[in-house]
Amino acid sequence: MLTGQTAVVTGASRGIGKAIALELAAKGANIVVNYAGNRDRAEEVVANIKALGQEAFAYQADVASEGEVAAMMKEAIGRFQSIDILVNNAGITRDNLLMRMKEDDWDAVINTNLKGVFHCAKAVSRQMMKQRAGRIINVSSVVGVMGNAGQANYVAAKAGVIGLTKSLARELAGRGILVNAVAPGFITTDMTDELASETKEQLLQQIPLAKLGEPEDIARVVRFLASDDAAYLTGQTIHVDGGMVMP
Ligand code: NAD
Image 1 (spheres, helix red, strand yellow):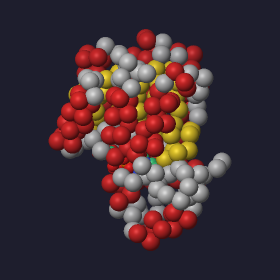
Image 2 (cartoon, rainbow, N blue to C red):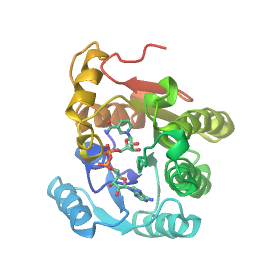
Image 3 (tube, rainbow, N blue to C red):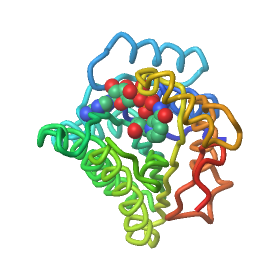
Image 4 (cartoon, protein in one colour):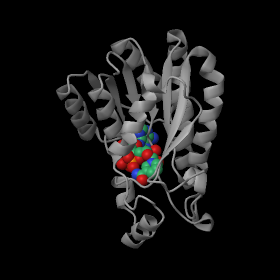
């Protein structure tokens, strides 16, 4: 149970982030529902959390902005007095083949998917160090391990998240802060809705469990990583992908 704990979940207005926010709330955590643009959807998630009996508020912040992230964490501590769990879930894709990929596409994806994790982890670490306890859970991707044609920016960021997870795990272990990652395979969300049906068919052939995952499949593993059951686990990346990658 996560009763009385505070979790900040980035990109929590839809998809995997929303499922994580609801799963942690169902186990008793109060939630900061970070969102980038869609206030109505974020407020819906807040209402769902309150219906579960927990506290929550929506906070608009671009994870790529150090100042916005710092202000969000300050607000979280002001309202809930602690930050026990940070889930770095926010992410975007801007796919293109290398020769067609613009510098803007590279920067946007790296800034959101990798630098955003750095900003959020840095901003919560001061508080978690004072608490001498905390969990940071980063959402990477199987493609960060496998590589993927047409996603050089996204893959570089997600591979970077795995390295950052290991580094922070070593750096923060002495302060009681555990840092792990989940690497989802292909999960049915707005992000994967954009894939062509032939691409989905090809993907299915690479997945031993022969189905795409659901956001809740990721959320349950994140809940485990946030729980006392994962107290002796740090620096790891758990692949939640139906068996697609077996490193
Ligand atoms: P999604 O597009 O439905 O959700 C992403 C969320 O991040 C959205 O709510 C979006 O508003 C938010 N976001 C984007 N940029 C942001 C920013 N700068 N600041 C704050 N929030 C921002 O996608 P999803 O499928 O739910 O993906 C969630 C995470 O899981 C991402 O990191 C994604 O890379 C990762 N992932 C997804 C899959 C998949 O198959 N869906 C697979 C592997 C990894």
